Length: 328
Image (tube, rainbow, N blue to C red):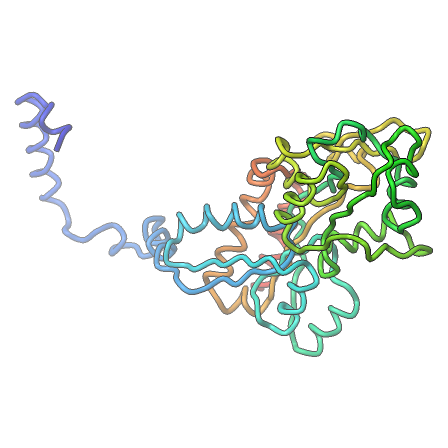
C-alpha cells in the first residue's frame, strides 16, 4: 500500500489496465496447470514436517547447529535437534537406530560398525570439514608460547606434573589438565597422535564432553592446559591463549589457522570431521533427505563462519553422488 500511495494517477490507470488484461486470461494458476513446474516443486518443499534427530561429537556440534539454524528458517515445520553426547555416545545411539544422523570427529570403529550391522543399520559416511585441535592455556598465562609433541606426551601421560619439569624456565606450579571425556572422538584422536600405542593417558585431568566447561576451567586457572576443537578457541580467544605446536624439537612452532590446518602444516593435530547418515532414515523420511542435501550444500560455507575449514568442492560433490546413489 505504501508504494501504491506514491504512484501518480497515470501509473494507477496503467496498473488497473494490466489487472483487466490479466483477468482475461485463464483463471487457473501455473502450478495447477503444470504440477511439475518450479513453483510446484517449491510448494512441495514447503510442506515438509517431522523430526530430524542428530547427536554425537561436540566438535562437530557448532557446525551442525549453524546449519540446522539455517534449515529451520527454510523449513520451520521440521524439528531439527542436535545433541552433544560425544562421538562415542552418538554412535551408541546411531547404531541402534535412535538417531538419523551422527556427528563424528573420527571414523566409526569396527566394533561400532558391527553393532550397526547386528541391528540392520546401514549408513553412509560424509566428510564435511577440516578441524584442528587447539592446545590452549588461560589468557592469564604469559609463559607458555609453544610446546613440542614430546612435551605434550610427557604432560598427558603424567610423566611430568609441574610446569618447571617441562622446561626449567617455567614456574614451579602444578599443571592442571582439561580435556574431552572418553566418549569424545577428540579424545580418541589425541590418544592416537599425542599419547601413542606405547603409553597411557593420565587419569588426572578434568574431563567433559561439553567444550564450554573446558573453556571455563582453563580460562580461570593460570596454570591450566587443555585441548579441544579449533572452533572453540576462535569463539573464546579473548579468554584463552593458543599454544603453537612443534612436531619435534627442531621444527618451527606452528599455530593452527585456516591456512595451516588446510595445508597440513599444522601437524599432527589436523583432521577431517564427519557426519554419518542412516540410510533408512534418508530414504523413508523426506525431511531427513532434504536436510542432508541442505547440510552438504551449505557445509563448506558454514564451516568457515564457525571456525572450521571447508573441504575442496569435489569432496562435497562426491558426497552428493553418494547420496544420489542411495536413491537408485
